[in-house]
Image (cartoon, rainbow, N blue to C red; front, side, top):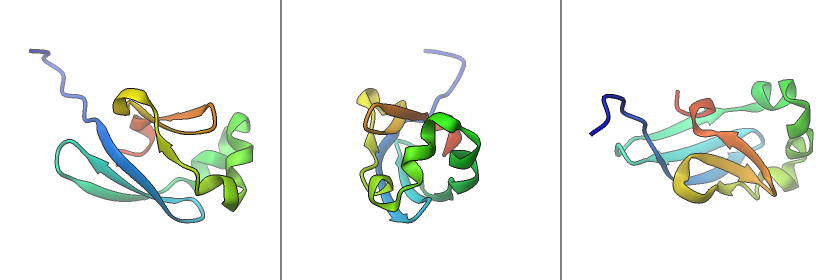
Length: 79
């Protein structure tokens, strides 16, 4: 077993523009506002469109969330 614990996402849903509800394998359910983070990363600019934002889903393995092919690491929403 690894000495490091890395929580994994089990589900994600868009609540409102730039707010996500994240579900973790720890049993935690966390709501997080990622608007500021999205604005700082130029590659994620298309996600600022509310229609695109609602298309959020888990990347394979739960290591990230993504919209289209644009991934956002789980460490950015585990807070």
